[in-house]
Every structure is written in C-alpha cells, then in structure tokens.
Image 1 (cartoon, rainbow, N blue to C red):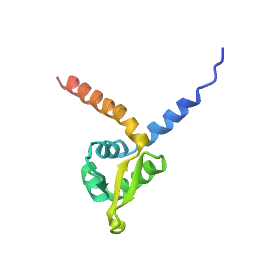
Image 2: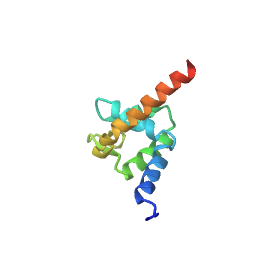
Image 3: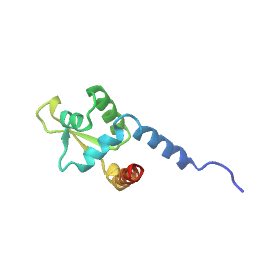
Image 4: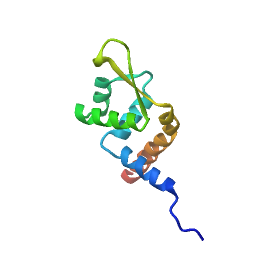
Length: 110
C-alpha cells in the first residue's frame, strides 16, 4: 500500500491559505456578484477594508490567476478588476461555502 501524500492536498492547502487571508474571499465574492468590472475604490468600499489590504489581496489574487486587472484607457486610477476564467469555475464552490455558513449561522442562532 502506497502511503505517500497526494500532492493535490498541498495545492488545496495553498489555495485555502490565500483565500483565508483578510478580505480575499470577500473580494472574489464581490467580483463574482458584480454585473461589470469594478474599480479599485468600488471594491474597497464593498469589502470595507483599507486600501493597503485590498491592494495586497488583489495583487496576490492576480498572481494566482484568480483576478484580472484591465484598464479602460483613462489612467492608473481607472484600473478595473474582474474574476479570471479560473475563478469563475471556483465561483459555485465559493457560493456554496457562503450559503453553508449562512445556513449554519441561522441554525446556530435559532
């Protein structure tokens, strides 16, 4: 019997480490729910975080190919953010997690 650890566990650990950083999952959920690409300031207000936190998370999410940064051509202040195609496939899992926590919270309160 082979008792070596499946390397996928390590990859899942890496993803969970990223997603559990302050505001990372919230940013992905906001981008997922948005009907259009979001400006940095809009995203910052939606997640209720400091500029530094949002900036760091967006950079990390982009490095992991979960978000895309696009410009609308009007300068640095007009950077827009969207989910990547990879993150769109993760979207139902994120929503399920959100729904599970919400339902469990309602049960715990009831």
